[in-house]
Length: 266
Image 1 (spheres, helix red, strand yellow):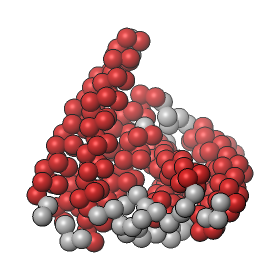
Image 2 (cartoon, helix red, strand yellow; image 1 turned 90 degrees about the vertical axis):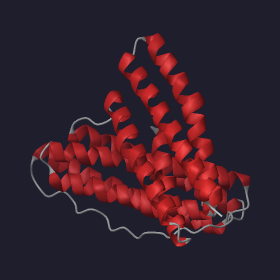
Image 3 (spheres, one colour; image 1 turned 60 degrees about the vertical axis):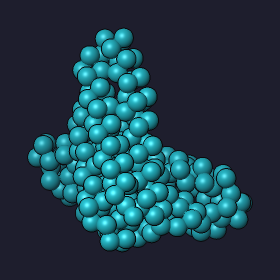
Image 4 (cartoon, one colour; image 1 turned 90 degrees about the horizontal axis):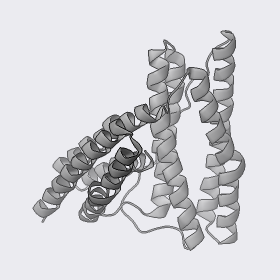
């Protein structure tokens, strides 16, 4: 699920870069593939793992994640970045820590509403989208680069999880909570992940983005998912084994599509 969430987030940025370069067919390819990674692969893996539970359980899980990020992870990353002279990263980490505290507090209020049936679920946060263009990393320390990678994977996973929690809230007849989760997911993806991605320099020109995607899809289709399928079958988790095998086939198809797209670039 970590890998699928990260693929969705990065392909969304790669699609934006393809649009910037006037490559609409590649843009659509990245967008379609991102949709499969989140809407099919992540969603099915989340269902098998029991990721989403009751609205109260989902809120508690979200609060735990936000508490860790706002109190421990991001303050630590900010302090280390400042020590290493990466001021822009330190400022971003500190800003995101404040955002995550606000998310935690909003989820806490929503949990009280869910438990008591009284009050109003907070409105979703406002998204301030960050534009990411191809460019080199804007940080210098290896520690900062590693922390950015850790943070990006966390933001991508949080966004994908909140998307599933929003679907659960809708199914439970709680549209206000669904809107809160959906809005929070958008902040994690379009603001936090994007801001970190810009500093990390993970978006390149489209040819390189396609190469990155091909390598990732080949790893998942040839190594990761076949290994997971074999392990799941050995453990008797037949449904998981079947899903992993299916996803491996999908990822191989994605790799071929990205390869074809790269071959057509001049």
